[in-house]
Amino acid sequence: MEENDKSSLLGKARERLMEAGGEVSRLKTEASQAVEEGVVAARRLAKRSRYAAEDLIDDTAHRVKRDPLRSVAMGLAIGVGMGALAVWLATRNARE
View 1 (spheres, rainbow, N blue to C red):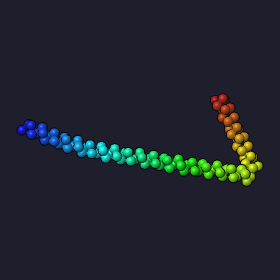
View 2: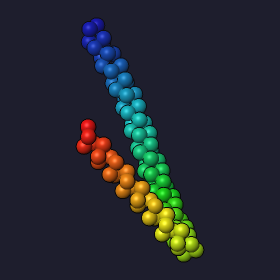
View 3: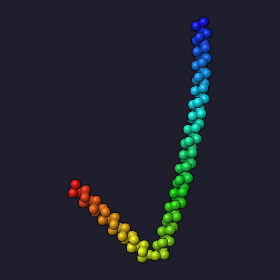
View 4: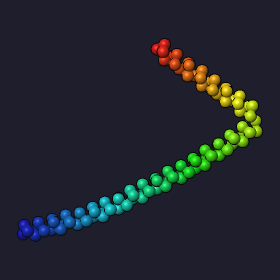
């Protein structure tokens, strides 16, 4: 009688292990698909970002050709502003 109990418990354990194995296989497949979808989405984002950067460069080149004095003045103003910010940050940190 004890042997029947052991064999039935072993049978149930085997069934549960088979079910768990099937579940693990399904989860592995789902995880693989999720990773693959993430890679595809990242590639699409990189491609769109590259196109946006190229468009920005083309627009900038067009604007510089169309109005060079304004472009130089804007570059000078941005450079002076960044320099002033750097000096202000450096002196502020030195005082503290």
